Amino acid sequence: MASELLKCLQEEVTCPICLDILTQPLSLDCGHSFCQACITAKTKESTTNQGGESRCPVCRIRYCTGELRPNWHVANIVERLREVKVSPEEGQKINLCERHEEKLLLFCKTDGKVICWLCERSQEHRGHHTVLVEEIAQDYQKKLQEALWKLKEDQQETRMLEAGIGEERTSWKKQMQTERQSIQAQFKKLKDILEYEELRELQNLENEEKAVLGSLAEAEDELAQHSQLLTDLISDLEHQLQGSTMDMLQDVNHLMESSRDSTLTPKYDVFWHFYGTKTNERYVLLEII
Image (cartoon, rainbow, N blue to C red):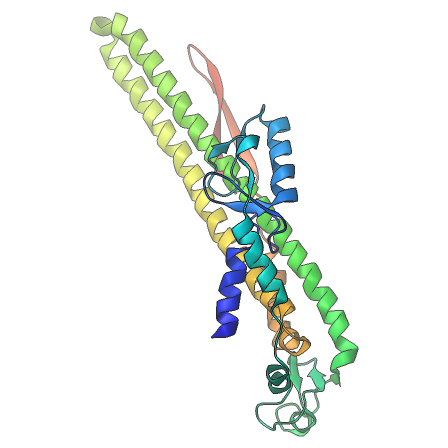
């Protein structure tokens, strides 16, 4: 129960940008907190790329640099978390085999599990490749760390794609509204002669809007699912790395396989279709795959 509570508390004080425990936390008026270095760099990037406009990386609400302020309450919680240690009694219990109550000194590379000397001689692990825990721990810790960083990079890229799709949808809605008003104004002058043509053009425009927004919505849903998958895997890997060496090595093969599978996400390519009208020319986003 205590470990679950500690995990939940750590998630609450995790920076949404770097996904590590907050360092010198700063908060926005929207309530979200970030590491001072992370949000400062993000603000500088937004100022450079978006003409001075900054948005919260979580909820996308606009903010000014002057709204950033230290969150001492969260900073105190982070300090308390860093002081938490596992008690010696708990450590000894973790290092014993649940079945034989012998010390867990061996690692079965075939099954990816920490075992004792009696487990090695059992039918379950007979003939498997086993090594001492201290000989293999550093190697697996390096592999897990590399997998964690790769997942974080994929998650950051996914979030950027999600934000881009949201902005694209807003832009399309505004553009469609402007064009709708223009078409209505033009056909109003010639209503008696071109009423049929006006209705047909509006219907075509509406179909075009639905098709484009439908494609964007579908891509956004897929990115959201991929983002959730990355979040879950990162949480599992961070939990594995934050525990003892024994915890880290338990079922490590399964975690490594899951992290490798998650990195096979296809790149999202944007295809555009050009067409012309009597009054203007534009590109239309057809699909994202």
